[in-house]
Length: 507
Image (spheres, rainbow, N blue to C red):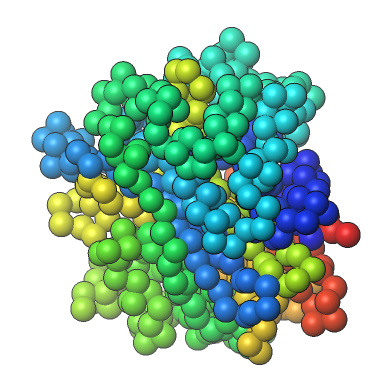
């Protein structure tokens, strides 16, 4: 089975399985194809994280395919220029593309059919083109303005967004994928492709070098985990923000959510307050794996202290100041196969069309993950050479009674930990069926506002406002989710979010 955000990618992932590939092969094939299906969301100039459950085992492994800042990156130099943050379309926002190295290494480690066979569907559709789907068309219209000159050449029609039903093709990317299929990671991180990326960045004033590209490697790592109700939640470790979802759930253990109606003011309020506190901790502690201090994020004692700050009759004001005493001491695809392998993979260029900077020759759209750094001197997540920034993308996986039962993910940038907690409480506190749990309305406490989807009633919105929340309605849906539940009978139950164009398919 495959569940992902575009039907064509799900179909081609199943095709890989039918050809004898395993879940890892299919997940990579579908993910790379999503870069053509949804170029505003992801592409080979971006990053990925993955959780992998091998066949015949219930152990969960993690792979960090996030790129680093160039060696010459300097927060001090940016501060000297008067900068207080890294701009979303600034060349400094571009970190090295990490996903391709991760795809190649994961293929070598766990795959069955080789990277050349894995990339064939994406090569075909990059050349033939893919019709633009409804959600993609809406995003394209909202985000085309960020593209630079080369970006407009490759990802617009003379500056205009592609529209629903029009066909988008990327033949120069097909050439890049052919080189990777033939030469592995070296087809991307050295030679003409790497030179195109670096020269395009230097033309924008970047300090990136071909040596940075050649020396980059993704890394296998160990998941972080926590418990809630009767399940274990596995998340990708820092520099991913997965520990934030664990902290939200640890805070929520202090409240009897199941006694509150699923669509109630009380539930939305408690979850929003828990998220505010957890995101504050994230901003303090999640950073490059070498300096991150996520232990604070995983501590139930810390979560209990934070929960004690929540009041049912009012909102928390000035969260950073209030938590100082407690704290002193970021597309998604999931695939399962008949042998029991499960892959939870998320792959992104961060903001819509990433940095907006595309390479001049091959049209590789480059991510703006460097926005995840900050410029605060001495902070664990301070911008610096060779460092990985705090990342929003978080694949998830559930284990129950020692058996892995559900790879899942919730897309949506900063929303993702909140989305994980909302989905899992829908399932385990309210007993919702999987598709219902994904469909259910969402709220998001973000930067001082409580964002509500339009389906949440005006009565609820007013009551939340009365508690002190700055309520705002969001015109676009909050996030998008996919999941596969692996029943003990051997049946796979898939679900895909109607907020996106995707689907769950199996055979």
